[in-house]
Amino acid sequence: MAESTEPTALSVEHVVVKRGDKVVLHDVTFECNSGQVLSILGPNGAGKTTLLKVIAGLLPFTGRVRVFGTPLSSLDPRSRARQLAFVPQHTLLRAALPVRSVVAQGRYAHLGGFAQPRLADRQAIERAMAKTDVAQFAERAFTDLSFGEQRRVLLARGLCTGARILCLDEPTASLDIAHALSLHALLRELAQEGHCIVVVMHDLDDALLHTERALLLHRGKQVALGDSADVVAPSYVESVYGVRMQAEAGLRFSLQRGGKE
Image (cartoon, rainbow, N blue to C red; front, side, top):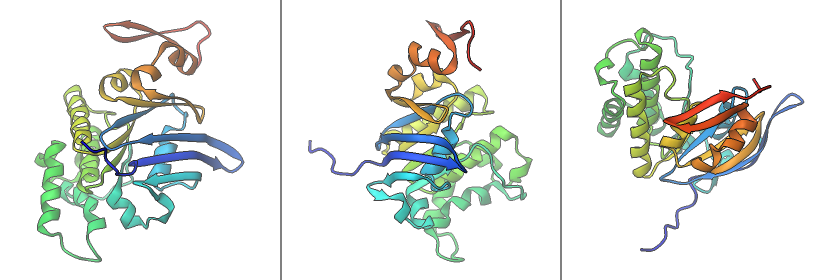
């Protein structure tokens, strides 16, 4: 079988982010291909969400980000939204819109002006709600949902875009176990369908179980990149998190003496 000539889905090269005179992200470089799930790991304040916002085109930076070989900077907002969807951890949405209307926002890049949704758009909305198990909330106000339910609606909105690159910021936060497992299965299914998935995670067990590649950040610096099993390794975990790994039934951690916060 001939090798695919499609360019790398997401390429990040020497990205630096500054806030005033402070460098908050230092020289980060990695790639994620179609069919992969890559986790971004690190303690609070490591720069994980900052990096995700750079990829989504929401923060200024120096360096290069390419989407299927095209510089991110050359894509207008609609073109970018058709290629890449960002699912935030929190939303500023406070209007009591029906869930179906919130999910439908994901189709704006496919519609011109005030055009009405077409059959393909309506089908994409229904598929996204079904995949994320929010169809039963379709007519309820988004603001009436629990935080975990809102997270699933935001994921549905991201899926509704049809974008092949999905960037998710801690998507399992506040989800119950069943929905968290369902979400990880969905991300794996999407990767198998050809999506490129980049997901910020706190749980190292989840990174090992549900992703094949990982990027570890600490204080804005890239510490490790590679197979998840190589990145979630005792030496890296101890130096970054200040805990010791105990490989028993799942991962277990114990504070090291003089451990870091």
